[in-house]
Structures are given as structure tokens and as C-alpha cells.
Length: 301
Image 1 (cartoon, rainbow, N blue to C red):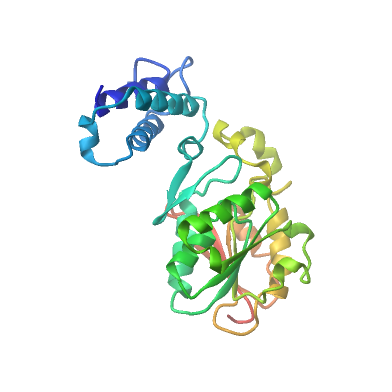
Image 2: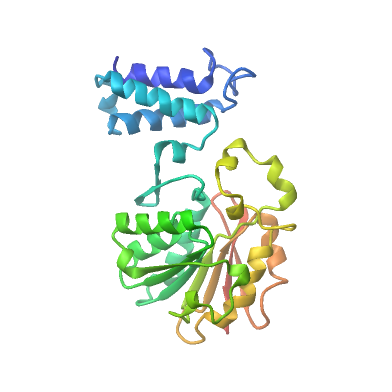
């Protein structure tokens, strides 16, 4: 068997059907779209063969590689996220380890990092806080791209703290990142996790899905921690906590003095009514043209 044959075999497993002519695999299939099947098959084969080169189509595939590819394909066909199936995923220019149930970074979050980079990359020596680090994608990208910056990260999930620490070492920035286990909704300005503050800016991709929306989510999301997804009755419980504490932990001096949030599009306008007095709010679009990111400038920052 060669690489191209393995690709076809993996596609058949993912489809759960011998036909790929329809958009979905059908009632007996996995329920994945044809596009999802194509992406998963390609990534699984690249992962198993250890190369993304076009010549992989002609590579001889060992029985062990065949077995491994089929095992991964069956997991994806059961709707386990591809990131967990592969155990790693690229975020910007870094490859991060992925483990369930830690939140998987979405493509939109790369846009958030881009926005922060464009606004603040000229400033040296910034010290920032990330609330809800997950796999560490945001903090690690910012630290990697800004060698003079340092960061503190908090999360209420032990698994997220451990995975971020692992990824920080993998990315070579562990010496510039301090992590604490902390639920932001119970934190106070004097909590030990803020002892290295005040911070030049704070960034967060908080849980923002409404509780009544949780049962309607795609099957893949059952592999992720509900605490990283559900933001309470209106989806804004954690966002409120962040907005309440931000003025007490963000520096009043310096050139940043900003809070950055990634939210669902309907929530961006709602947040305008929650920001502390005297702050200036800017809403930024994601790559699909939806309102997604909120930038809050504190104290005329």
C-alpha cells in the first residue's frame, strides 16, 4: 500500500460509506461533511507518515502505519475533534499539544492575537495577564512573537494549567510565563494570582455560550470542558467578572492599559453597557466579517 491508497482507505472509514458524492455520509455514516472528511483524511495521513510533502502519495506504508491511521480515523468518525485525535495542532506558527478536555483554540482566536500584535508590538517589556489559558495558545503566541514580554496566566482547570505549562516548555517560553489555578468569578484584586501586577493589558477568550444553547452544540464539543464553553444564563457571567476586576489589576500608567475579549457576535454590543465608566470600547471583526473582539481602553488609554 502507498500513501495515496492509505488516503482513500482513511476516507472510507471517515465517511462510514462507500460513497462520497453527497454532502453528508448518510444515516449509516459518521455525519461528517465531505469537506470535514477530506481535511481529516489528509491530516491523519500526514500525521502517520510524518511528512506533508507531496511525495507522501508514493510512500510505502507499513502495516503499523495502516493500523495507526485506521485507529485515528475511527476516533474522528465518532466525532472526536481532529485536534484531539492527532494530539497536536498548529496555532499561528507554533505546534501545540492538544488533550481533551482542554479547550481547542479556534481560527478566530488567531485574529485576536493579530489585533493585539498590530496595536502593541512596538511596545517593549509589557507584562500581561491571560484569563482562562486553555492550551496556552494566546499567551504562548504573544510571548513567542515578543521576546521582551512576560505573562501571567490563570485557569480554574488543572488540566489546562498542566497543558499550558507543557506547551510553554515546548515553545521555549516557560521562563516568561507564570501560571496560577484561579476561578476569575471568585477572585479579588488581592488574590495571589495578581501579585505580579498591575498588568499592562489583560486578554481573555472567556466561556460565552448561553446555558440553553449547550445541548444544541455539535457532537465534537462534548469532548471539551463545559466550564470552558458555558458562560451562564446569558453567556456573560465570566465576562462580567473580568470587566469588574479589570480596572483594579490593569496599570494606570504606560501605553497599553487595555482589555481584550473574544466573544460571540451578539454579545459585543451588550458588553458596551457593562464596561466601567470612563473607558473607551472598540469592536473588531473576525475573518468572516462578524463582530467578535472587544478592545476596552482604560483611563483614556
